[in-house]
Length: 301
Image (cartoon, rainbow, N blue to C red; front, side):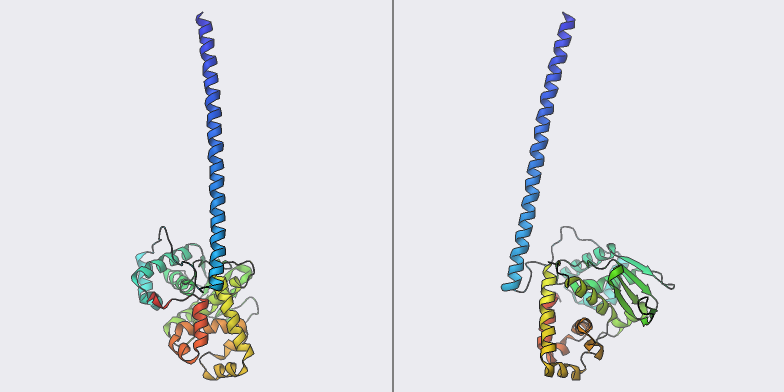
């Protein structure tokens, strides 16, 4: 009898275990289905948000719904903050809250890019912070501030021989290698004199932005804003010979700007940051278009 009781108990335990496993299996399937529905809802909401925002920017107001939203802001080291506070004028003028946003973006930019020295250059925080800050200054009006076509910065002490044409270059953007190359001497000179409309860092990084935003698959609001106003500027320059001549005669933009459309927009944005008052006074339409293409906010300061 004891033997039969043991067998019966074991049978009951097996049945209970099978029942529990089936219940657990049903619970797991239910949880996975709920998770799938939740993910689908998130995808739909994001797609709807992107569509509505695109329509908003296209037909109602030329500004995105929001620019800065961070659940956890990254911090820079004391040394990196010191460099910003003493060597980067744009950051120095920002409101305290905007400085925290700027620091967060600089920290993330540094984390996601490689910095390589050549010809004896040893990479320091100065290289990383000043280059990253230039990129963040240009994209501070955009929600998406990552450069899709850029992963590496190569830094030489001074002008270097380009691998593309063997000529001496101060800076260049190589899309094939996702790299920007700088002469550090010339990069620093771009910030040493803040109103000569000559800034190597801004110039080369605008080339990267332009290259990124010109891609048809780029659906970012920043790309929409940039290309819309770029087209307006391009049309004005090429359809109005008198305006073009007046712009050249003003000497506000150096002659290199008129080499081609890519160089023009880079030089124009250099001038926007280095001589904003002069650009706004002499050519308010150009100023307004650049301000809109970068979603630049005067209330940052």
